[in-house]
Image 1 (cartoon, rainbow, N blue to C red):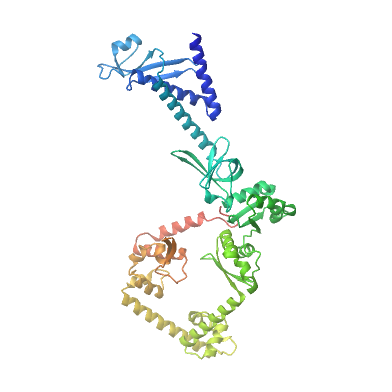
Image 2 (cartoon, rainbow, N blue to C red):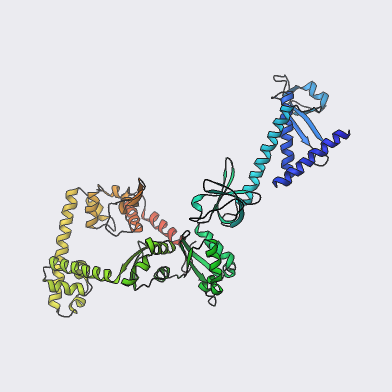
Length: 538
Protein backbone atom coordinates (compact mmCIF):
# COMPACT_ATOMS: atom_id res chain seq x y z
CA UNK A 1 0.00 0.00 0.00
CA UNK A 2 2.89 2.32 0.87
CA UNK A 3 4.41 1.69 -2.56
CA UNK A 4 1.10 2.56 -4.27
CA UNK A 5 0.86 5.79 -2.26
CA UNK A 6 4.45 6.67 -3.13
CA UNK A 7 3.70 6.11 -6.82
CA UNK A 8 0.60 8.26 -6.59
CA UNK A 9 2.55 11.02 -4.86
CA UNK A 10 5.37 10.69 -7.38
CA UNK A 11 2.97 11.21 -10.34
CA UNK A 12 1.72 14.50 -8.91
CA UNK A 13 5.25 15.65 -8.00
CA UNK A 14 6.42 15.01 -11.57
CA UNK A 15 3.40 16.89 -12.96
CA UNK A 16 4.10 19.87 -10.65
CA UNK A 17 7.81 19.94 -11.53
CA UNK A 18 7.20 19.83 -15.30
CA UNK A 19 4.46 22.49 -15.09
CA UNK A 20 6.78 24.83 -13.14
CA UNK A 21 9.78 24.23 -15.42
CA UNK A 22 7.88 24.76 -18.69
CA UNK A 23 5.54 27.47 -17.35
CA UNK A 24 2.42 25.59 -18.43
CA UNK A 25 -0.75 24.60 -16.64
CA UNK A 26 -0.51 21.55 -14.33
CA UNK A 27 -3.75 20.11 -15.76
CA UNK A 28 -2.12 19.97 -19.24
CA UNK A 29 0.75 17.87 -17.84
CA UNK A 30 -1.68 15.52 -16.06
CA UNK A 31 -3.73 15.17 -19.28
CA UNK A 32 -0.50 14.29 -21.15
CA UNK A 33 0.28 11.63 -18.53
CA UNK A 34 -3.21 10.18 -18.89
CA UNK A 35 -2.78 9.94 -22.68
CA UNK A 36 0.64 8.32 -22.25
CA UNK A 37 -0.64 5.72 -19.76
CA UNK A 38 -3.63 4.94 -22.01
CA UNK A 39 -1.29 4.43 -24.96
CA UNK A 40 0.93 2.11 -22.91
CA UNK A 41 -2.16 0.15 -21.79
CA UNK A 42 -3.29 -0.28 -25.41
CA UNK A 43 0.07 -1.91 -26.20
CA UNK A 44 -0.89 -4.61 -23.64
CA UNK A 45 -4.64 -4.94 -24.20
CA UNK A 46 -4.67 -4.37 -27.96
CA UNK A 47 -4.29 -1.32 -30.22
CA UNK A 48 -8.01 -1.27 -31.10
CA UNK A 49 -9.11 -1.17 -27.48
CA UNK A 50 -10.64 2.15 -26.38
CA UNK A 51 -8.78 2.64 -23.09
CA UNK A 52 -9.00 5.77 -20.95
CA UNK A 53 -6.75 6.67 -18.00
CA UNK A 54 -7.71 9.08 -15.23
CA UNK A 55 -5.37 10.57 -12.63
CA UNK A 56 -7.05 12.19 -9.63
CA UNK A 57 -5.41 15.67 -9.47
CA UNK A 58 -5.69 15.73 -5.66
CA UNK A 59 -4.71 12.21 -4.62
CA UNK A 60 -2.76 11.03 -7.65
CA UNK A 61 -4.89 7.84 -7.79
CA UNK A 62 -4.78 6.20 -11.25
CA UNK A 63 -7.90 4.58 -12.74
CA UNK A 64 -7.81 2.58 -15.99
CA UNK A 65 -11.02 1.74 -17.83
CA UNK A 66 -11.91 0.13 -21.14
CA UNK A 67 -14.89 1.74 -22.91
CA UNK A 68 -17.22 -0.69 -24.71
CA UNK A 69 -20.25 -0.01 -26.91
CA UNK A 70 -23.42 -1.95 -26.01
CA UNK A 71 -24.71 -3.85 -29.11
CA UNK A 72 -27.13 -6.66 -30.08
CA UNK A 73 -24.47 -8.75 -31.76
CA UNK A 74 -20.70 -8.38 -31.27
CA UNK A 75 -18.64 -7.78 -34.43
CA UNK A 76 -15.48 -6.44 -32.76
CA UNK A 77 -14.98 -7.76 -29.20
CA UNK A 78 -12.22 -5.21 -28.56
CA UNK A 79 -14.70 -2.30 -28.52
CA UNK A 80 -18.17 -3.94 -28.24
CA UNK A 81 -20.15 -5.83 -25.58
CA UNK A 82 -23.52 -7.64 -25.66
CA UNK A 83 -26.45 -6.26 -23.67
CA UNK A 84 -26.43 -9.19 -21.22
CA UNK A 85 -22.75 -8.67 -20.36
CA UNK A 86 -23.22 -4.94 -20.10
CA UNK A 87 -26.10 -5.36 -17.61
CA UNK A 88 -23.84 -7.39 -15.31
CA UNK A 89 -21.64 -4.27 -15.09
CA UNK A 90 -24.52 -1.78 -15.11
CA UNK A 91 -28.11 -3.06 -14.71
CA UNK A 92 -29.49 0.09 -16.41
CA UNK A 93 -27.43 -0.38 -19.62
CA UNK A 94 -29.23 0.03 -22.96
CA UNK A 95 -28.17 -0.69 -26.56
CA UNK A 96 -26.09 2.20 -27.86
CA UNK A 97 -24.70 3.12 -24.42
CA UNK A 98 -20.99 3.19 -23.64
CA UNK A 99 -19.88 1.06 -20.67
CA UNK A 100 -16.66 1.63 -18.69
CA UNK A 101 -15.00 -1.66 -17.70
CA UNK A 102 -12.39 -1.06 -14.98
CA UNK A 103 -9.00 -2.67 -15.71
CA UNK A 104 -6.51 -3.91 -13.08
CA UNK A 105 -3.22 -1.96 -12.64
CA UNK A 106 -0.15 -3.42 -14.38
CA UNK A 107 3.60 -2.85 -14.62
CA UNK A 108 4.81 -1.01 -17.72
CA UNK A 109 7.39 -2.79 -19.79
CA UNK A 110 10.52 -0.94 -20.94
CA UNK A 111 9.13 -0.27 -24.45
CA UNK A 112 5.72 0.82 -23.15
CA UNK A 113 7.37 3.17 -20.65
CA UNK A 114 9.57 4.65 -23.39
CA UNK A 115 6.51 5.17 -25.61
CA UNK A 116 4.63 6.81 -22.74
CA UNK A 117 7.56 9.13 -22.11
CA UNK A 118 7.55 10.23 -25.78
CA UNK A 119 3.82 11.02 -25.60
CA UNK A 120 4.32 13.14 -22.48
CA UNK A 121 7.28 15.01 -24.00
CA UNK A 122 5.33 15.69 -27.20
CA UNK A 123 2.21 16.92 -25.39
CA UNK A 124 4.24 19.12 -23.06
CA UNK A 125 6.17 20.57 -26.02
CA UNK A 126 2.91 21.40 -27.83
CA UNK A 127 1.53 23.07 -24.70
CA UNK A 128 4.76 25.04 -24.29
CA UNK A 129 4.54 26.22 -27.92
CA UNK A 130 0.92 27.31 -27.46
CA UNK A 131 1.92 29.21 -24.32
CA UNK A 132 4.79 30.95 -26.16
CA UNK A 133 2.56 31.94 -29.08
CA UNK A 134 -0.22 33.28 -26.82
CA UNK A 135 2.34 35.22 -24.78
CA UNK A 136 4.05 36.93 -27.74
CA UNK A 137 1.34 37.28 -30.44
CA UNK A 138 0.10 40.47 -28.77
CA UNK A 139 3.63 41.85 -28.28
CA UNK A 140 4.28 42.64 -31.96
CA UNK A 141 5.53 46.23 -32.05
CA UNK A 142 7.30 46.06 -28.67
CA UNK A 143 10.98 46.15 -27.77
CA UNK A 144 12.21 43.06 -25.90
CA UNK A 145 15.43 42.42 -23.97
CA UNK A 146 17.26 39.12 -24.13
CA UNK A 147 20.65 37.45 -24.24
CA UNK A 148 22.40 35.83 -27.18
CA UNK A 149 21.96 32.06 -26.91
CA UNK A 150 23.92 31.15 -30.04
CA UNK A 151 24.97 32.54 -33.43
CA UNK A 152 24.26 30.42 -36.52
CA UNK A 153 25.75 31.62 -39.84
CA UNK A 154 25.38 35.24 -38.76
CA UNK A 155 21.78 34.75 -37.54
CA UNK A 156 21.35 35.35 -33.82
CA UNK A 157 19.15 33.15 -31.61
CA UNK A 158 17.99 35.26 -28.66
CA UNK A 159 16.96 33.83 -25.29
CA UNK A 160 13.99 35.85 -24.00
CA UNK A 161 13.73 33.89 -20.75
CA UNK A 162 10.81 31.54 -21.42
CA UNK A 163 11.08 31.68 -25.22
CA UNK A 164 13.57 31.86 -28.06
CA UNK A 165 13.51 34.44 -30.85
CA UNK A 166 15.26 34.74 -34.18
CA UNK A 167 17.25 37.81 -35.26
CA UNK A 168 18.26 37.28 -38.89
CA UNK A 169 21.54 38.64 -40.25
CA UNK A 170 19.74 41.11 -42.55
CA UNK A 171 17.84 42.51 -39.52
CA UNK A 172 21.12 43.37 -37.75
CA UNK A 173 22.89 46.71 -38.16
CA UNK A 174 25.88 46.67 -40.55
CA UNK A 175 29.17 45.60 -38.92
CA UNK A 176 27.26 44.59 -35.77
CA UNK A 177 28.68 41.46 -34.13
CA UNK A 178 27.20 39.60 -31.16
CA UNK A 179 28.74 36.82 -29.06
CA UNK A 180 27.11 34.23 -26.83
CA UNK A 181 25.70 35.70 -23.58
CA UNK A 182 25.74 39.31 -24.91
CA UNK A 183 22.72 41.36 -23.84
CA UNK A 184 20.56 42.53 -26.77
CA UNK A 185 17.56 44.80 -27.38
CA UNK A 186 15.39 44.33 -30.48
CA UNK A 187 11.96 45.03 -31.97
CA UNK A 188 9.35 42.25 -32.32
CA UNK A 189 8.05 42.68 -35.88
CA UNK A 190 6.32 39.32 -36.40
CA UNK A 191 5.14 36.24 -34.48
CA UNK A 192 4.04 33.24 -36.54
CA UNK A 193 2.73 29.80 -35.62
CA UNK A 194 4.79 27.35 -37.70
CA UNK A 195 5.19 23.57 -37.90
CA UNK A 196 8.27 23.59 -35.69
CA UNK A 197 6.58 25.87 -33.16
CA UNK A 198 5.93 29.59 -32.76
CA UNK A 199 8.60 31.73 -34.41
CA UNK A 200 9.34 35.15 -32.89
CA UNK A 201 11.12 37.42 -35.38
CA UNK A 202 13.19 40.35 -34.13
CA UNK A 203 14.75 43.32 -35.91
CA UNK A 204 17.22 46.09 -35.13
CA UNK A 205 16.89 47.72 -38.58
CA UNK A 206 13.10 48.26 -38.55
CA UNK A 207 12.14 51.98 -38.58
CA UNK A 208 9.79 51.41 -35.63
CA UNK A 209 12.70 50.10 -33.51
CA UNK A 210 14.08 53.63 -33.46
CA UNK A 211 10.61 55.09 -32.79
CA UNK A 212 10.16 52.77 -29.79
CA UNK A 213 13.64 53.64 -28.47
CA UNK A 214 12.66 57.32 -28.52
CA UNK A 215 9.43 56.45 -26.70
CA UNK A 216 11.54 54.83 -23.95
CA UNK A 217 13.93 57.77 -23.69
CA UNK A 218 11.46 60.68 -24.12
CA UNK A 219 8.68 60.87 -21.48
CA UNK A 220 6.70 63.33 -23.64
CA UNK A 221 6.37 60.68 -26.38
CA UNK A 222 5.37 58.00 -23.86
CA UNK A 223 2.74 60.38 -22.40
CA UNK A 224 1.38 61.22 -25.87
CA UNK A 225 2.28 64.93 -25.77
CA UNK A 226 4.85 64.51 -28.56
CA UNK A 227 3.87 62.26 -31.46
CA UNK A 228 6.19 60.52 -33.93
CA UNK A 229 4.60 61.03 -37.37
CA UNK A 230 7.09 59.24 -39.63
CA UNK A 231 10.44 57.47 -39.53
CA UNK A 232 12.92 56.70 -42.32
CA UNK A 233 16.17 54.81 -41.77
CA UNK A 234 19.31 53.83 -43.60
CA UNK A 235 20.24 51.34 -40.82
CA UNK A 236 23.59 51.95 -39.17
CA UNK A 237 24.25 55.13 -41.17
CA UNK A 238 21.55 57.79 -40.97
CA UNK A 239 17.91 58.28 -40.07
CA UNK A 240 15.21 60.95 -40.11
CA UNK A 241 12.32 61.15 -37.68
CA UNK A 242 9.40 63.60 -37.95
CA UNK A 243 7.77 64.73 -34.70
CA UNK A 244 4.96 67.07 -33.70
CA UNK A 245 3.59 68.33 -30.40
CA UNK A 246 -0.01 68.36 -29.21
CA UNK A 247 0.89 71.02 -26.65
CA UNK A 248 2.00 74.36 -28.11
CA UNK A 249 4.22 74.98 -25.05
CA UNK A 250 6.30 71.83 -25.74
CA UNK A 251 8.98 71.92 -28.44
CA UNK A 252 8.88 68.43 -30.03
CA UNK A 253 12.43 68.60 -31.44
CA UNK A 254 13.88 69.88 -28.16
CA UNK A 255 12.07 67.18 -26.17
CA UNK A 256 13.60 64.46 -28.38
CA UNK A 257 17.09 65.97 -28.28
CA UNK A 258 17.09 66.37 -24.49
CA UNK A 259 19.43 68.32 -22.23
CA UNK A 260 22.74 68.64 -24.09
CA UNK A 261 21.56 65.93 -26.48
CA UNK A 262 21.34 63.27 -23.76
CA UNK A 263 18.11 61.65 -25.02
CA UNK A 264 19.01 61.43 -28.69
CA UNK A 265 22.54 60.30 -27.78
CA UNK A 266 21.12 57.33 -25.84
CA UNK A 267 19.27 56.23 -29.00
CA UNK A 268 22.34 56.87 -31.19
CA UNK A 269 24.48 54.71 -28.88
CA UNK A 270 21.98 51.83 -29.07
CA UNK A 271 21.98 52.11 -32.89
CA UNK A 272 25.79 51.95 -33.13
CA UNK A 273 26.32 55.62 -33.93
CA UNK A 274 23.52 56.03 -36.51
CA UNK A 275 23.14 59.77 -37.19
CA UNK A 276 19.58 60.98 -36.53
CA UNK A 277 17.91 64.11 -37.98
CA UNK A 278 14.92 65.14 -35.84
CA UNK A 279 12.50 67.11 -38.03
CA UNK A 280 9.40 69.15 -37.09
CA UNK A 281 6.39 67.66 -38.89
CA UNK A 282 4.00 70.01 -40.68
CA UNK A 283 0.53 69.39 -42.17
CA UNK A 284 1.65 71.56 -45.11
CA UNK A 285 3.39 69.17 -47.51
CA UNK A 286 5.78 71.75 -48.96
CA UNK A 287 6.93 72.89 -45.49
CA UNK A 288 7.34 69.29 -44.33
CA UNK A 289 9.47 68.38 -47.36
CA UNK A 290 11.65 71.50 -46.91
CA UNK A 291 12.16 70.45 -43.26
CA UNK A 292 12.89 66.86 -44.29
CA UNK A 293 15.71 67.96 -46.64
CA UNK A 294 17.58 69.62 -43.76
CA UNK A 295 20.39 70.50 -43.41
CA UNK A 296 20.14 71.71 -47.04
CA UNK A 297 18.48 75.09 -47.74
CA UNK A 298 15.59 75.21 -50.23
CA UNK A 299 14.89 78.20 -52.48
CA UNK A 300 11.63 77.08 -54.14
CA UNK A 301 9.29 74.09 -54.37
CA UNK A 302 6.80 73.11 -57.07
CA UNK A 303 4.13 70.55 -56.07
CA UNK A 304 2.39 68.05 -58.35
CA UNK A 305 -0.28 66.75 -55.97
CA UNK A 306 -1.88 64.34 -58.46
CA UNK A 307 1.35 62.40 -58.90
CA UNK A 308 2.65 63.08 -55.35
CA UNK A 309 5.81 64.51 -56.84
CA UNK A 310 7.68 67.68 -55.87
CA UNK A 311 10.43 69.67 -57.56
CA UNK A 312 12.85 71.31 -55.13
CA UNK A 313 15.20 74.12 -56.17
CA UNK A 314 18.34 74.60 -54.05
CA UNK A 315 21.32 76.98 -54.38
CA UNK A 316 24.10 75.61 -56.59
CA UNK A 317 26.44 75.20 -53.62
CA UNK A 318 23.81 73.21 -51.67
CA UNK A 319 23.10 70.52 -54.29
CA UNK A 320 25.49 67.87 -52.94
CA UNK A 321 24.26 68.54 -49.37
CA UNK A 322 20.60 68.19 -50.43
CA UNK A 323 21.24 64.96 -52.32
CA UNK A 324 23.59 63.55 -49.68
CA UNK A 325 26.20 60.84 -50.02
CA UNK A 326 25.00 58.28 -52.58
CA UNK A 327 21.62 60.06 -52.60
CA UNK A 328 21.03 59.25 -48.94
CA UNK A 329 19.55 62.58 -47.79
CA UNK A 330 16.98 62.93 -50.58
CA UNK A 331 16.12 59.20 -50.41
CA UNK A 332 15.40 59.37 -46.66
CA UNK A 333 13.39 62.60 -47.12
CA UNK A 334 11.33 60.87 -49.82
CA UNK A 335 10.68 57.84 -47.55
CA UNK A 336 9.78 60.12 -44.64
CA UNK A 337 7.26 62.23 -46.60
CA UNK A 338 5.97 59.61 -49.04
CA UNK A 339 6.56 61.98 -51.99
CA UNK A 340 8.93 61.62 -54.94
CA UNK A 341 11.46 64.45 -54.77
CA UNK A 342 13.33 65.92 -57.76
CA UNK A 343 16.20 68.21 -56.81
CA UNK A 344 17.70 70.80 -59.12
CA UNK A 345 19.96 73.82 -58.74
CA UNK A 346 18.94 77.42 -59.44
CA UNK A 347 21.13 77.33 -62.57
CA UNK A 348 19.42 74.16 -63.83
CA UNK A 349 15.98 75.62 -63.15
CA UNK A 350 16.90 78.85 -64.95
CA UNK A 351 18.20 76.86 -67.93
CA UNK A 352 14.99 74.80 -68.02
CA UNK A 353 12.83 77.92 -67.84
CA UNK A 354 14.73 79.45 -70.74
CA UNK A 355 14.37 76.26 -72.76
CA UNK A 356 10.59 76.12 -72.07
CA UNK A 357 10.30 79.82 -73.00
CA UNK A 358 12.09 79.24 -76.32
CA UNK A 359 9.92 76.19 -77.08
CA UNK A 360 6.66 78.06 -76.33
CA UNK A 361 7.77 81.05 -78.40
CA UNK A 362 8.52 78.76 -81.34
CA UNK A 363 5.15 76.95 -81.01
CA UNK A 364 3.25 80.29 -81.04
CA UNK A 365 5.27 81.62 -83.98
CA UNK A 366 4.66 78.48 -86.07
CA UNK A 367 1.02 77.80 -85.09
CA UNK A 368 -0.18 81.42 -85.41
CA UNK A 369 2.15 82.47 -88.26
CA UNK A 370 3.86 85.16 -86.16
CA UNK A 371 7.35 86.61 -86.13
CA UNK A 372 9.80 85.49 -83.40
CA UNK A 373 9.36 88.66 -81.31
CA UNK A 374 5.56 88.32 -81.12
CA UNK A 375 5.90 84.66 -80.13
CA UNK A 376 8.31 85.65 -77.33
CA UNK A 377 5.91 88.39 -76.18
CA UNK A 378 3.06 85.87 -75.74
CA UNK A 379 5.36 83.39 -73.94
CA UNK A 380 6.67 86.12 -71.61
CA UNK A 381 3.07 87.00 -70.65
CA UNK A 382 2.65 83.48 -69.24
CA UNK A 383 0.71 81.81 -72.06
CA UNK A 384 1.67 78.13 -72.27
CA UNK A 385 -0.60 76.73 -75.02
CA UNK A 386 -2.45 77.85 -78.13
CA UNK A 387 -5.72 76.89 -76.37
CA UNK A 388 -5.10 79.58 -73.71
CA UNK A 389 -4.75 82.25 -76.40
CA UNK A 390 -7.88 81.01 -78.21
CA UNK A 391 -10.16 81.07 -75.19
CA UNK A 392 -8.75 83.81 -72.93
CA UNK A 393 -11.08 86.89 -72.60
CA UNK A 394 -10.33 89.27 -75.47
CA UNK A 395 -9.78 92.20 -73.11
CA UNK A 396 -7.00 90.32 -71.30
CA UNK A 397 -5.20 89.69 -74.59
CA UNK A 398 -5.72 93.29 -75.77
CA UNK A 399 -4.36 94.59 -72.47
CA UNK A 400 -0.87 93.29 -73.27
CA UNK A 401 1.47 96.23 -73.97
CA UNK A 402 1.97 96.60 -77.73
CA UNK A 403 -1.34 94.90 -78.70
CA UNK A 404 -4.62 96.57 -79.60
CA UNK A 405 -8.10 95.00 -79.81
CA UNK A 406 -7.90 94.30 -83.57
CA UNK A 407 -4.55 92.53 -83.18
CA UNK A 408 -5.88 90.52 -80.21
CA UNK A 409 -8.94 89.49 -82.24
CA UNK A 410 -6.71 88.42 -85.13
CA UNK A 411 -4.54 86.35 -82.74
CA UNK A 412 -7.62 84.60 -81.36
CA UNK A 413 -8.98 83.91 -84.86
CA UNK A 414 -5.65 82.41 -85.91
CA UNK A 415 -5.54 80.33 -82.68
CA UNK A 416 -9.09 79.03 -83.26
CA UNK A 417 -8.24 78.24 -86.90
CA UNK A 418 -5.11 76.36 -85.82
CA UNK A 419 -7.05 74.32 -83.23
CA UNK A 420 -9.75 73.49 -85.80
CA UNK A 421 -7.08 72.26 -88.23
CA UNK A 422 -5.41 70.15 -85.49
CA UNK A 423 -8.82 68.71 -84.55
CA UNK A 424 -9.54 67.84 -88.22
CA UNK A 425 -6.13 66.17 -88.60
CA UNK A 426 -6.66 64.15 -85.39
CA UNK A 427 -10.17 63.13 -86.46
CA UNK A 428 -8.86 61.93 -89.83
CA UNK A 429 -6.13 59.94 -88.08
CA UNK A 430 -8.69 58.49 -85.65
CA UNK A 431 -10.89 57.30 -88.52
CA UNK A 432 -7.85 55.85 -90.29
CA UNK A 433 -7.08 53.79 -87.14
CA UNK A 434 -10.68 52.48 -87.04
CA UNK A 435 -11.74 54.14 -83.76
CA UNK A 436 -15.56 54.26 -83.54
CA UNK A 437 -17.43 57.60 -83.41
CA UNK A 438 -19.28 56.55 -80.24
CA UNK A 439 -16.01 56.57 -78.26
CA UNK A 440 -15.85 60.38 -78.77
CA UNK A 441 -19.01 60.72 -76.64
CA UNK A 442 -17.42 59.30 -73.46
CA UNK A 443 -16.97 62.28 -71.04
CA UNK A 444 -13.31 63.23 -70.62
CA UNK A 445 -12.10 61.68 -73.89
CA UNK A 446 -10.22 64.10 -76.20
CA UNK A 447 -9.31 63.80 -79.90
CA UNK A 448 -5.66 63.26 -78.97
CA UNK A 449 -6.71 60.41 -76.66
CA UNK A 450 -8.76 58.83 -79.49
CA UNK A 451 -5.63 58.62 -81.66
CA UNK A 452 -3.66 57.13 -78.75
CA UNK A 453 -6.49 54.61 -78.16
CA UNK A 454 -6.44 53.60 -81.84
CA UNK A 455 -2.65 53.10 -81.74
CA UNK A 456 -3.14 50.79 -78.72
CA UNK A 457 -6.03 48.78 -80.23
CA UNK A 458 -8.77 50.41 -78.11
CA UNK A 459 -11.36 51.11 -80.81
CA UNK A 460 -14.78 50.95 -79.17
CA UNK A 461 -16.57 51.98 -75.96
CA UNK A 462 -16.53 48.29 -74.89
CA UNK A 463 -12.75 48.15 -75.41
CA UNK A 464 -12.26 51.15 -73.10
CA UNK A 465 -14.81 49.84 -70.58
CA UNK A 466 -12.87 46.56 -70.38
CA UNK A 467 -9.56 48.30 -69.59
CA UNK A 468 -7.85 48.35 -66.20
CA UNK A 469 -6.30 51.57 -64.85
CA UNK A 470 -2.79 50.17 -65.52
CA UNK A 471 -3.71 49.70 -69.19
CA UNK A 472 -4.06 53.47 -69.51
CA UNK A 473 -1.37 54.91 -67.20
CA UNK A 474 1.15 52.05 -67.30
CA UNK A 475 2.83 50.10 -64.51
CA UNK A 476 6.21 48.93 -63.23
CA UNK A 477 7.31 45.33 -62.81
CA UNK A 478 10.50 43.52 -61.83
CA UNK A 479 12.28 41.55 -64.56
CA UNK A 480 15.58 39.78 -63.97
CA UNK A 481 16.14 41.81 -60.82
CA UNK A 482 15.52 45.16 -62.54
CA UNK A 483 12.46 47.42 -62.27
CA UNK A 484 10.99 47.90 -65.75
CA UNK A 485 8.42 50.56 -66.70
CA UNK A 486 5.61 49.35 -68.99
CA UNK A 487 3.92 52.22 -70.86
CA UNK A 488 0.13 52.61 -70.85
CA UNK A 489 -2.11 53.66 -73.76
CA UNK A 490 -2.23 57.26 -72.45
CA UNK A 491 1.46 57.49 -71.47
CA UNK A 492 2.61 61.11 -71.57
CA UNK A 493 -0.89 62.58 -71.02
CA UNK A 494 -0.06 63.46 -67.36
CA UNK A 495 -3.17 61.48 -66.35
CA UNK A 496 -3.49 60.49 -62.68
CA UNK A 497 -4.74 57.03 -61.73
CA UNK A 498 -7.97 58.59 -60.41
CA UNK A 499 -8.58 60.37 -63.73
CA UNK A 500 -7.91 57.17 -65.69
CA UNK A 501 -10.28 55.21 -63.44
CA UNK A 502 -12.98 57.90 -63.91
CA UNK A 503 -12.54 57.64 -67.72
CA UNK A 504 -13.01 53.85 -67.61
CA UNK A 505 -16.10 54.12 -65.36
CA UNK A 506 -17.70 56.66 -67.74
CA UNK A 507 -17.08 54.21 -70.60
CA UNK A 508 -18.80 51.46 -68.57
CA UNK A 509 -21.81 53.74 -68.07
CA UNK A 510 -21.85 54.49 -71.82
CA UNK A 511 -21.57 50.76 -72.62
CA UNK A 512 -24.49 49.99 -70.28
CA UNK A 513 -22.42 47.84 -67.91
CA UNK A 514 -23.41 50.03 -64.96
CA UNK A 515 -25.85 52.91 -64.49
CA UNK A 516 -25.03 56.54 -63.73
CA UNK A 517 -26.77 56.02 -60.35
CA UNK A 518 -24.41 53.11 -59.52
CA UNK A 519 -21.42 55.31 -60.37
CA UNK A 520 -22.72 58.21 -58.25
CA UNK A 521 -23.38 55.85 -55.30
CA UNK A 522 -19.85 54.46 -55.54
CA UNK A 523 -18.32 57.96 -55.59
CA UNK A 524 -20.44 58.94 -52.55
CA UNK A 525 -19.10 55.93 -50.61
CA UNK A 526 -15.50 56.89 -51.50
CA UNK A 527 -16.09 60.44 -50.25
CA UNK A 528 -17.61 59.12 -47.00
CA UNK A 529 -14.52 56.97 -46.38
CA UNK A 530 -12.10 59.90 -46.83
CA UNK A 531 -10.83 61.43 -43.55
CA UNK A 532 -12.27 64.78 -42.56
CA UNK A 533 -10.11 67.90 -42.65
CA UNK A 534 -7.67 67.82 -39.74
CA UNK A 535 -7.74 64.04 -39.42
CA UNK A 536 -4.64 62.02 -40.21
CA UNK A 537 -4.77 58.53 -41.66
CA UNK A 538 -2.67 55.95 -39.85
